[in-house]
Image (cartoon, helix red, strand yellow):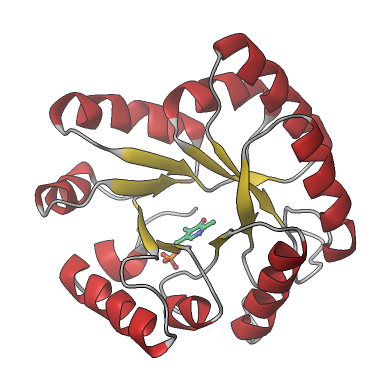
Length: 218
Ligand SMILES: *Cc1c(COP(=O)(O)O)cnc(C)c1O
């Protein structure tokens, strides 16, 4: 599928859901993709990208940034506290803030650096053992804690369990965000971004549907 096709599907989903046209941001998830494919998408004019790992992002984006204006980079994968500084210097948005220790580190670094990426808090809506994120029952308290640290909390993020109906998880995330007065909803991937838009997604994270399947893991 092409970038143009994904964009037009997003536009249709916005219309179908009575959403403001252009209100959903497409994050093109470029993790593990060959640089030529990423560059082709840059040449088509797209500027908003997502990466899973700080190391990989640091290896590829400074060069692209030196050659293309207006790039916006989102970190969507797990973040270790010892990589937090590098992440904060590199990305515009972090979607995977999932524990107080990390929030504390980001807050301290924000003071020191005088700036902070936009923050999304990850919620483990499926309560899966192996998945990152705070439990739904802990989410309100975590939002309050992050706000009291002066972190710029823009919204919530989730990755639904693979074998469950994603809409239930999107609806749950939207409900938690609404009761906490948060407008950002990072939800929806290649296979379910239209459902996510129907339930209020403001940021969809689409990888393989734009770039093709990834060889290798992550
Ligand atoms: C890889 C990844 C995506 C994109 O997945 P696709 O199915 O390729 O669209 C979205 N979000 C996260 C957190 C990811 O790790």
